[in-house]
Image (tube, rainbow, N blue to C red):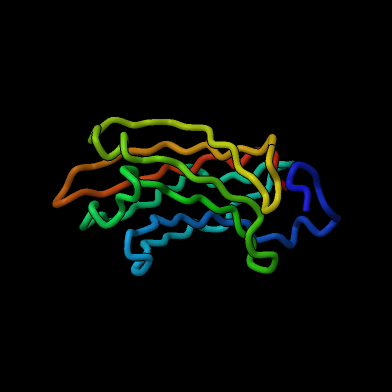
Length: 143
């Protein structure tokens, strides 16, 4: 499926949302959060700066090969996975209170290159022990 262009005339039937996963060393109890359904505007999906938060109780369980990775997936209720990317968030967790904006390239299953991106702003709010907040902006050039 080509997420860079409209695949059919049923794009209004899509229910695009973002799914966030923080893989753990054990492979179980993976923290997962889902955004609200985004709004399709042309070839983009907007999320009106929705904020998604993770309660990170044990960051050591998230450390795999010296890094903490966040998996971001664009999904549809019927079609399932449309595209995904991985983002290292280790530096975000080491700089509490500092917002880090990133534009990440996303790939459809089987693709090796893409024009599609997701714009996210990361901010780690140190609490006991901490809260990761994601500000959802726009998934560009995807439907």
